[in-house]
Length: 145
Image 1 (cartoon, helix red, strand yellow):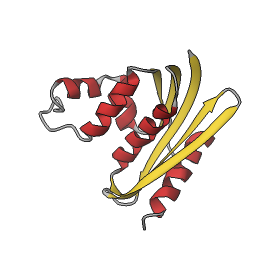
Image 2 (image 1 turned 90 degrees about the horizontal axis):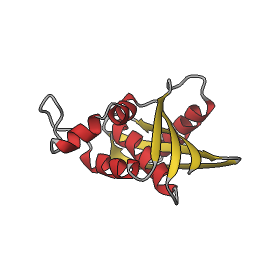
Image 3 (image 1 turned 180 degrees about the vertical axis):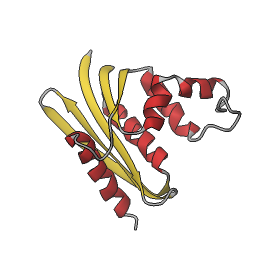
């Protein structure tokens, strides 16, 4: 399996509001940056969209090291929360509806294709790839102002 490293971030001005996402994919000496946004969205939707968009670019099953500053994304994947929400019909353990089931469906399907190892990184800190993803996401969100 090819080894790919992916950094992702989402941004939103207001929650909901104009949002953007960014991702950096690293494979060997290759680097690809992708980004996008929406006029009215939430930060968590942009965080999820960044991961989905990056994983969707991979043309074959890969070993992926995923880095994100989103506890929502990392914890839901690493701790299995998202699978529990799905099993309960997109209801959380506190009986409240799980948010963003449309995006979680897509992401969970991609986790069945790729072998993901998730890493939480501190946002707005010393990680140059996370900072680059933030720059991409913020730039996209500003296109909608």
